[in-house]
Length: 186
Image (cartoon, rainbow, N blue to C red; front, side):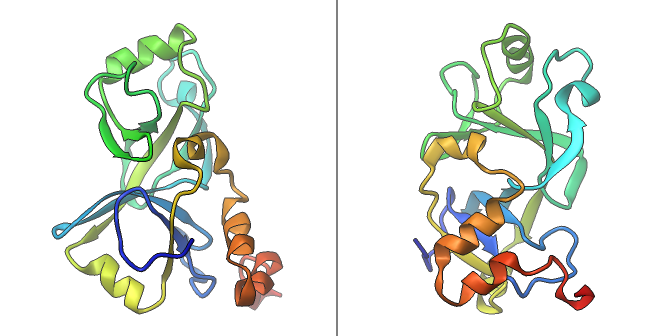
């Protein structure tokens, strides 16, 4: 499950030692792109209090919006598993795609052809400059894991996903699964 090499489509699980960081404490990030110039990902387990209809009233759906990360939080991004329906999608891996024609996407949602297991919306994203993520790996900020859920992760990852991933890691991580979010307040 744990991997050392970074490739898009993997999961970055925040180390339990990331305490007090509002964006990344107990985060699980889907790595959407990674190359020599940098990396992009989306936090997949931090739902916000908004739905897509709250942000775009012309969309008649109550899909949750997630906090994708601290970069460009005034922009809406999406991942999905239906490239045959959404033109101009970019494959991440394992049948997960990023973006695509948004007008088509809105129409498909309003026509009931896309459900919450097909798509996930984010405000913002997580980004790293060249070598920044590698340096964070060296400082033990992240655990890299393969995405064993493939394209079903869109419907799977919930706000309890970090705890589930920590439990799957087992060993010394097990104790952290029931620890309070900020142990200093205990």
